[in-house]
Image (cartoon, rainbow, N blue to C red; front, side, top):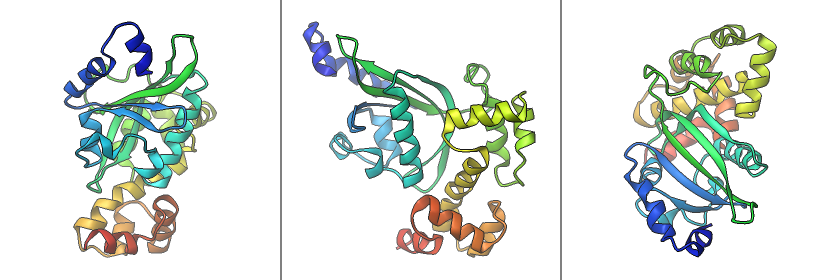
Length: 241
């Protein structure tokens, strides 16, 4: 990718480094195997890293929790087929055990011969009250509602209504955008939101389960293990050391 720019006489790396001036947006480029070729400074800060060498050549599975990495892999597979992901609102976990709502766009990267040789993306914070940021996202209103009410009883009909769609259309568009059902997405969302409470509070697992929308501690433990790869008690002990 960089070589193609260089062949036209450009200092490719110098051009790409303009993205280091993005003060809020993370930017990245990956090759066809999902390995990071370049990332900007905000991307590094999101993961609590200091040097690009900590990222370059690695994949999402080496940087993220399994459920997020799997979603990113599915994204890459779609983009490598020529499909663009435009202004998708999503929640991502951060290195400090907090979560952040972002707007993500991903596009294919082409060689001079018109072949797709990788993917590129940009992700910026989603300000729920800022108008016009997600005008191209049909699920924007539903995701705004989830951001504010994810721990409330799940009601997919209400989410469909928020988006002005039939239940069937909402379910289809949601799966196309996020690769999971709305119900599964909410379960993953609740798990990621609970990480901060596990590490930075002394609340019992039962109380955290209740506050983050799980039916009981057993349900919380099961869903947490599925998303993160270990039980919440183990996660807490490992990160509170």
